[in-house]
Image 1 (cartoon, rainbow, N blue to C red):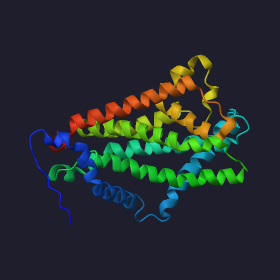
Image 2: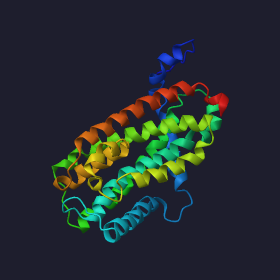
Image 3: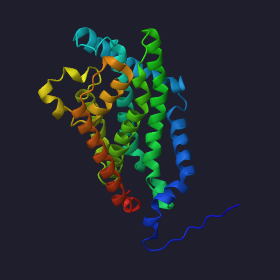
Length: 275
């Protein structure tokens, strides 16, 4: 059996950080599985909540925006599929923000007792939200069957946009996780950000309803590019993506991810003292 030796030297921990992250992958699996189990422990319908919540939200948005407001869909795509193709990435993103922001506070005892790369904790929180995302995808398949909607070849590009959504959730989550340790006020800010983000993101409507002269500015919201990408992949020829706005959103996602990792790593050494 191969033994692993941990050597503590000045500056050596920084150089081996990413290797340590891989070495502690079992802790990552354990934390993710624990959080998944705790989320649905002692619930009457268990994992079905991951289906009921987005389904009811989709119904409300379809009635409000599609029926009452009379907003158009994209091409001939059924309005419920238009809405749900945006709800998938949005709920993943918003859930990841909520889970990440509290992840370090929830695991405060671990931070003050043992060494491990702290990045493991918020990453495992994002994975928990990603599991809900995969479960919610069952509803999308059901809607396609119900409306006899057959996606085009673009559906094979969906993993690319899932990766972009994951990067957006991870970057923003790392920022909020680190900030919440230093400034506990962020526990009240995050729910507001999630609710406000829902209203300014094209979840219940198509981003094509935004006037052309404002679309580039609107794309400063990184979730606009993520949602448009999902719809482009899922709706096929019925969806036309605004590429300048998409590339702008993609650049912002990359910036948030890189700076999020940088800020988290900068603050990581103080977590045990501050928390």
